[in-house]
Amino acid sequence: MIPVNFNNVKIKIKNIIEHKNLKLRDIGEFGWINRVRSRVLQGRSGILAGIGDDSAWIKSQGSLLITCDLLIENVHFLKDIHPPRLLGRKALSVNLSDIAAMSGIPQYALVAIGFPQDTELEYADELMEGFLEVAVEHKVELIGGDTTASEKLCLSITVFGKPAHKKPVLRSGAKPGDDIWVTGTLGDASLGFELLKKSQTGELDLSDFHHSSLLVKHFDPDPRVEAGIMLGKIANSMIDLSDGLISDLGHILEESGKKTTVKAEVYLDKLPISKDFKEYFKGNPLDDENGLSLVLTGGEDYELLFTAKQSSRSKILEFSRKLDLPISRVGRIKKGKKAEVILRDEKARKVKHPRLKFEHFPSQERQMT
Ligand code: ADP
Ligand code: MG
Image (cartoon, rainbow, N blue to C red; front, side):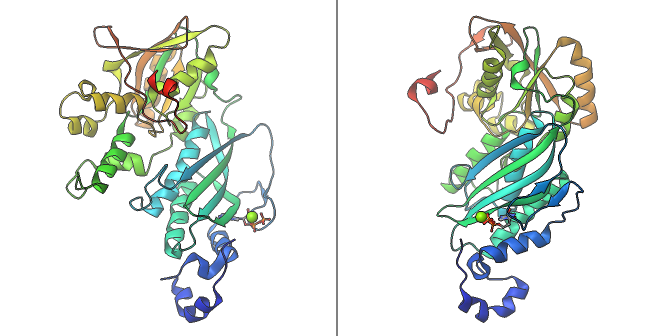
């Protein structure tokens, strides 16, 4: 509950019309909810009741995909430098990426926000602006949420969707002999984030920095919804890259290896790396310890990692052309004694893993693997 300061409302009555220089507390929780409600076109025929009642009421048929993600200030984003509009965009995009990874069509979203007491109304407005931009781009309808005051800015979004095909693509379908594929390029988002942190400590001047695509990948990832839908009939297993290639491929191996254990071989020279990433490292980024670590373990690329049988290769390359999105074949699933990712260089020699970069609840043992 954000308490309303009535004195302020009287004094700033003129400003209410202009919505300038106001704090969220000036209009209060319900003023804010009405404001969001007025910006949402609840046009979809499946919505029987959206924002404004105790629950949303949705017509539904068949199975549902449901996902939820939490973003917290200074854990997932640096509030001082993350523009609110882009934060709103990213908050929804990362959830759409989870629907994409199942080969789903996103439909509805709920947004729960904890705003610090002194949040400017303009800040909150821009955040919703970004959120609603992405919602419109992907035909997702905002059907409700929750608003509260909190010490740190936090955002939890839940998205509902439906499988694009008869069945969604699970993490558990990888089979020995499958190729391993990845959309887009690897490591850009985490390099972008590293550059931002450097700019905060004064090590890097962002106004001089020209590889803006790296920053965009961190600020405004593009969820691969269309690719996910196209790949739905072809991919045996799929996941979106939120934690980094090695970690996310590990999830596929774990889930797919319940009956017959499978391992993955990844060819380092086949990993897709963007021009700007290469330019930053001046030379082969995989020769640089940090470059290699960002490509293999840097998270938040929100690309799709999937496996498919070898006979699907030409179809996948055709999708890549249609989507105007690189899709690269980076390895192979094999039978194995344990679920492990083996890295090979261009001469097929084994390469040691760099340390995994990040876990929310790190344990020494896990970090060292
Ligand atoms: P309740 O107290 O019954 O949980 P609320 O007063 O929290 O209801 O919310 C009233 C309505 O506004 C509900 O339909 C809820 O889903 C919606 N809502 C609340 N916060 C938001 C938000 N940040 N964005 C969109 N809808 C919201
Ligand atoms: Mg509530």
